[in-house]
Amino acid sequence: MKKLLIILTLSLFTGFNAFSQDEETQSEGYEKIRDKMSEYIQKRLHLSKAESEKFSPVFLRYFKEWRTTIRENRGDRLVLQQKIVDLRLRYRSEFRDILGEKRGGQVFDHQEIFIRGIKELGKSRLERQGGGARRNKAMPL
Image (tube, rainbow, N blue to C red):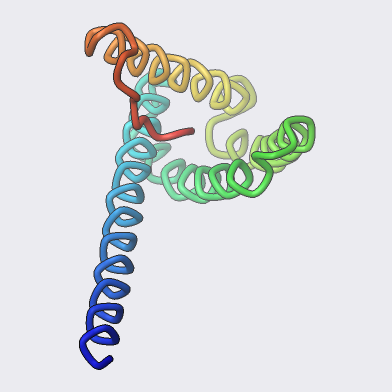
């Protein structure tokens, strides 16, 4: 009986450890995507160093809220779209204060272009791996 209890305990701890490592890896992946997206937007908007320093923390907050919104509302597409619109409206004024009227409104356009590029890259990688025979574990944005 003791052996069974020990085996069960060890297997549970191993499972929890593997799960936490997977979350860490996924979190690192999102951080890389966030950083690349921020860099991409900054380049496309030709931000000065001062603008970049003001833009980065605001974009970081926006990205975190954007990811949380997607995760929490994944089941209902219409609600998700509405929440994303609300989030963008809230952050649009902050981006406009930093970047000006025109460039502040372009942040979300460049975000969409970046996301489309990531999705296309994932599709092309999947096709190169055998025409979709293998399942791609791409991170959902």
